[in-house]
View 1: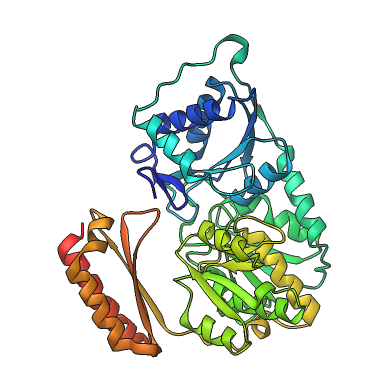
View 2: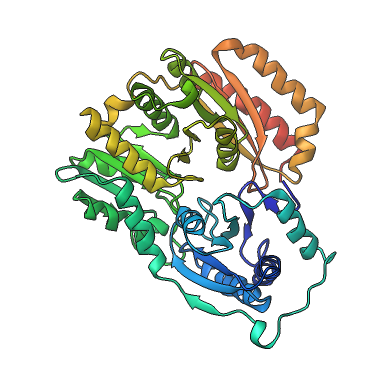
Length: 445
């Protein structure tokens, strides 16, 4: 990670860690960099948080000031921008979003022409400019870029999804929690086009309610609604709709690990699971690797972040990977997580096999898992602390092969995440509490 760019672009509290001025400066360098070979177009999308309009305007102004044209896709999912940049005439695409973070945070993600996060060398050039080590002259006269709306992008994206998943969902009852976010503009429309019997909750964004007590980070509301009604599948998206958590007909949660388990088995049965491998991260539940091993399917783990999952998938052309949090990548279709693609793939598996949502994931035993987040001043100092490392090693030895502990810095927030898996919740709480208390005592804020 760089000084400003984390695992998912630049992120911080709006007008504190990420100001309109900073967005303008990022836009200026993007406009400069991508105008070196003549005038180019850059796509910008945004989610529904209050500050997104402000940051979109600042980012677009900076891009145009350096000679690139800007196309505004308005409110849309992050994966829509990643898709459009690969299929249409754009030099890059930027998304104004802080994903699952609270409404007061925001961020800027930039996708290359290949639909992946910008390479580190370009991020480093942007950071040099932000730190004043590079100077730019403004474009003038006819060289100044234009800023135009691009509403057609949404229909292009929805039509593509419908073409790759031409499902008949008549008679399938779905509950969708769109999180007052980007999914409001895509999921209800597409699921209805496919014929689903659809109920939508949390579809009234006001700029302040995105991710608030709803969506993939707070699926309890979806689960409760599932138990009240008679549904086949529940879908809970996050703020920018790149991740999605599900619930079965009984309201039981189906995480990204459940999706990876079901997808791995399904693709293996179809002879489509290259290398008989599923790629995931260090946050995957211990039960996932054990359950897939029984199917003669191996699990390869990366550091947390869907961009790392995709990089690993590309190394050996693995076809499915993702994160427990609900970021799933099907390499045949996408370069980054897309909650709607995940939903459609799971529905396709249900229809193709005649299975319920729960039956697809049956056989996966989820080990109890406890995660404690500790807010700290300096994540790097914590990770290098010998006393903390010794405490983690002691817990790992205590758990042995029937559990594990993972301590890692958040890629997007000033947090140390302490996670443990074991045979009982009580043991998880005990060991995570021991390590978290030590971190909090020495470095907490």
